Image 1 (cartoon, helix red, strand yellow):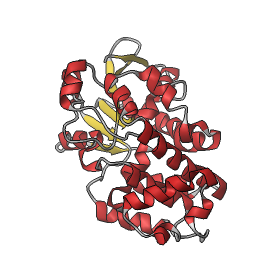
Image 2 (tube, rainbow, N blue to C red):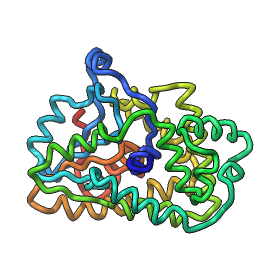
Image 3 (cartoon, rainbow, N blue to C red):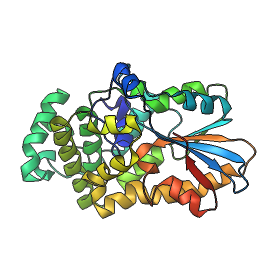
Image 4 (tube, rainbow, N blue to C red):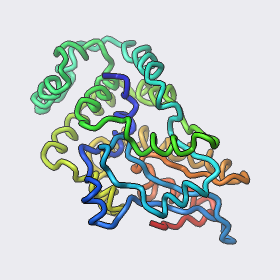
Length: 293
């Protein structure tokens, strides 16, 4: 089940339980948000697009405007480039997930969430003790994957990577760096993460598809409100999973945008929202960032 663990990680900042079908998206005539990055003189330097990392096959999310950008961009920038090497990702995960012995996972879960944990164990079709030898962050990722009914093989980032098969691909972090973010969390914050995954799994059961529909409609105001809840409502987790990463990415993107090639920057949609989002951070660096869809 850990072959696609990175999709679970990427979805932590923007969990998606299910998504609108092609017919629903066509009827709404709306698409996920897309931004243009330009210099003050109007010269276009690149684009920003917020992705969802696992989608059903019939999700209609590619707008005509995005298709134009895909053709115009010289480079694709993503969080993790080699998403197809699942064997290597699984091996990396397993090499990092078992360093600290903490006892049964169920005992690390907040008491009012233990029933949700039991339900996810049944959903994952594994023994209850299966996660017990994992650190809490690793158990959280595995449980997030179990809670997500969609497969990462049809994620927006994977489709875009395929589109750029003959063009340069830039990786902002990579699998190891992403996992190290979790591995560095102190044990109390790892347990907060574990609780948050269970809370969000319960919320998905109550209101399936809500985040996906908001994303697909390009409603960034409501999307930002949704991402203020759950694990990102915890200041320490928000800093580690979102704010600090965005600051590091913005500095690197500034260098990429100064090059002659024009990148399409496609990262998890939660990274593009609010004052800590990449559009805001690039504006602070002097770019004119305009939403074009």
